[in-house]
Image: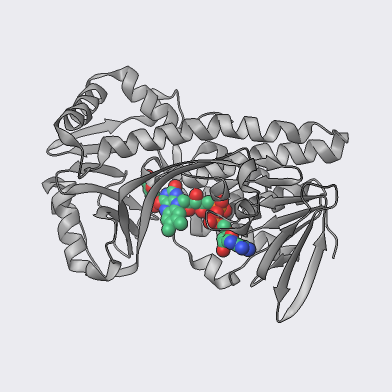
Length: 390
Ligand code: FAD
Ligand code: DHB
């Protein structure tokens, strides 16, 4: 099999890249380890920056997003009894975010691929990358017990944190930066109306909590739990009880509860691999970096990588430019590190840390006080939350 760009992973990064390249007449094959139904069902992020919604519209996928996405022009930070509304729209000169689940983004991308009968190969096993330091890279894989080989111009590693692409780079060629937090987020999805029309991020003595949503009838909630916690250890009743405590009495009085339809724990980690290009292999999205979810940046950062990567590949093919791809890694990393900083800062601001110590506890308190009293501090938060420009 031959293609121009072999894309590893059919998450949002891989499918968005494939769609944008297809619109420019660049041929791609996407290889995905899991089944289509598994990919479609994964519940993950929920807040989209304007940059991502613009890209989806450009890829011809703006219809359902426009009809069903919920524009949010603010959110609340709750600390004990106090409430601070971050007025995104006023603070950023008119910008906002859209609440639209990653599940829906994935469904829209998969439908677009199905409609044009694109080559997306699900349940591809033992994917292996070869010769990407040469001009003739190859990818091999197994499907239905048969061995296959794809010859290509480029390989794009969009296969997430545990994927094969980053692991294929020689150790000496890549530098990894990492911070692991001593807690995770236990998330539930439930068919109940959201507790508020906007998101509430809460810093409480028992730990962080977040009230989010997917629609007017579907709610997404998270609570901070120590590492090592099993989701089964938290029956629904206990989660609702804890949410009411952490989000405060006002939210508790309004909160509608019901059985969870999904429950899972995501560990919190900051991670960046540098650089993003190794000859004819480029890494993008979670394959290259992870942010803790507190600033809602994971999916959005994957999208900005794809913006830079698709631009570089399109310039390479259109202008036969040998240097277009050199821009990808430095341009993407400049934005990645700023999103890492913001996600780390918001995580430090809103969680309970078991070993914080009295000085750092005071620093967290001072940071919250400063934020509530300073328009400059709120503007910094709002500017990053709606997304830095591409
Ligand atoms: P992924 O979505 O991970 O997609 C990678 C794809 O590659 C997967 O389909 C995988 O099956 C495939 N793959 C892996 N290995 C191979 C292989 N060897 N061969 C072929 N295919 C392979 N972000 C937020 O902003 N807010 C959230 O609330 C949030 N919650 C999250 C919860 C969880 C459990 C996780 C894991 C992530 C969460 N994120 C969240 C982050 C966000 O979902 C990711 O940043 C986003 O999915 C990145 O997209 P991606 O396409 O780069 O990677
Ligand atoms: C959601 C996840 C986040 O990480 C966040 O900051 C806001 C919302 C969500 O899943 O709805």
